Image (cartoon, rainbow, N blue to C red):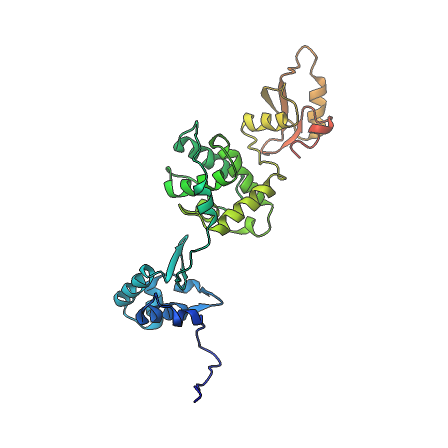
Length: 297
């Protein structure tokens, strides 16, 4: 005997044979699994099918009954929730592969000198300062699920809470230099995760963090600390304050700087010249030195 059927040329749904033979799912579970898979193409549903209500409507099913069936499938292990996505899976008796999150959680807990909320403020500061333009600002009160994900990321990379601001900023700078990441409208949870972190997000953060090491931090020219930090990075730790002056161009600024007498010149100050209405400096002290020649260029 042969089994024969007409192979459809379109409008069909692919499911693994392991689903059909799976002893852990009932026939009703399997039907629900296939119904959900039917709105997917190349393993992913379209944006128009981003809720159970929309999927039910597309399939012509009663929403209440379909929602109940989906919840039952999830309890049976046929759906795994990942960062807001629902992944269809075929449950088995085999032990699942350990995730990066599992490995991080097995590591000893660390002692910290900063509270979670203090560290959160450092994260917000680093994110908002160096994020790509397309990324959303990180504002508002302490967000525990995002913080938990962030701390898990930091623990994996051996980053202490005191350095969370620098860590966040370096990840953001790595994204700024990337042609794909820099154009996406990302929020903090999209990058670092939300409570439990998927392996892919661990890999992405590590990649961006390493890339960001080669990208200089953005400078807030209205902030003296930012300007001094850039000098200090180049070895000019003798400078402890900023003197702001106006000049139309580099020539005018250089002429003024050279005209300051030795008695008037403050060796502990960074002289920064701005053209009126322009944020970026046109000239600065020690510009003739190789280490600080392109300090603000």
